[in-house]
Amino acid sequence: MQLYKSVVMIYCVLFSLDSLAQTNTIQQIATEGTAVSVELPVEELADPSQKLSGDNTDEADSKAMPQYDAEFVAVPIVFSTETLSTTFGGAGLIKHAGQAQAVALGIGLYSANDSWLTYAGFYNYQLPTLDQWLFSAELFRGHYEQGIYYLPQSVKDQQTDRIISVGDEGFSKLHIKYVLPIGGGANGAAASLARKKNAVNWNPLESGVTSVTLTPFNKYRELEALDYLPDEARGFEFALDWDNRDSANNTTQGGQTNLTLTRGSEINDDPNWFMWEFEQSAFLSLGSNAWFEEQVLAANVYIADTPSWDSFDGDVQDYKRPPSFAGVSLGGFDRLRGYDSKQFTGRSAVNYALEYRVTPRWQPLQNLPVFNLYDVPWWQWALLLEAGNVSDEFSMSALHQDMKTSYGASVRFEVEDIVIRGDFVTGGDESQFWVMVNQPF
Image 1 (tube, helix red, strand yellow):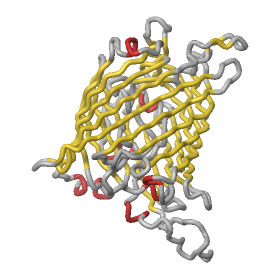
Image 2 (cartoon, one colour):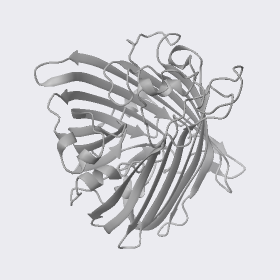
Image 3 (cartoon, helix red, strand yellow):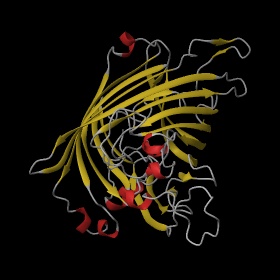
Image 4 (cartoon, one colour):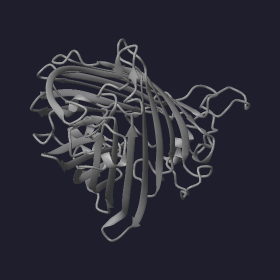
């Protein structure tokens, strides 16, 4: 089980997790991207120029989101794994948290072997007059008595050692997002979060939401068994994104293009480093039939490199490489899902994913116990196939040599505007069962 940013625990409550849950996956809630993607109904954001209720300002004031009452959802969490033993806690989610488009999330867990974690996230807030901007923040802290980690043995053989150690991990991030006033962002950043009902096309000036995001970050990982390893990474990410999907939660057509540049700062005797990642997804609707309301073929290509990998810093007498927990990796809840989280790390990576997604006409979840306490408008089944590789050389021949593969099946459903998914995937010597929020792409 991979806890990918908290709300995944809703699934743990609805279906009691058993020995299928992987023992190492709780140790990394998330290190990439925003935890929660809440897709607001278009009618809620239909008129972004509405005034706040009780607003006494004059008509010259800029756009303001209408006021909505906050909606709070909380769930208890109980599960058990081999390395954590019995774990319990809770998660709480607030929609319209002070602003119509804002979301707040908190989670806390404690296990019988004295492992624990906490997570807090505040997403999509706006400042007065800054209609094209969104601000989000995340904070995570975790302690694991029997954390499982994969550490590279050497540059040449591309092998990793599986280490069990007492570990402390955490990160803090601030996401500063500017939505360009074109296409779906023409009415402001908050309005761009609404579901899109118009047909998509491939002109960014008319379709999709184009944005740039600056994310200062600080990450750390301290292992008791290997205290000589680099234990901190900080710097900033710069991301250019064009989200041209008709829906972030249940995409049927369009695509998404993302380029992320990451600059790591010098810390003590560790040099600075530079990394880039490019990701392209595309979705093709295959129509409906007597069994399925929708059939979609979803494809994703991911490629990444660390250009500073072989650059030597004479001042600190070391190569300009990120710590393994902050650099390029495959394995886990989003890419090469048949392998453990961050099982493969190195200079560069490539990953291809293909999914066949169907939305059945038969949807019994809303009437089942526990499920009937929440809004569950749809569920989805998926078959998935992936191939990827990590290399310490950035070349197409090296990246496509001895590629690892994964295949499996998935069940996904939307709970209170948030996608919960469970993937059962086979790859390598073991099978993985992941539980997390959001679509993989």
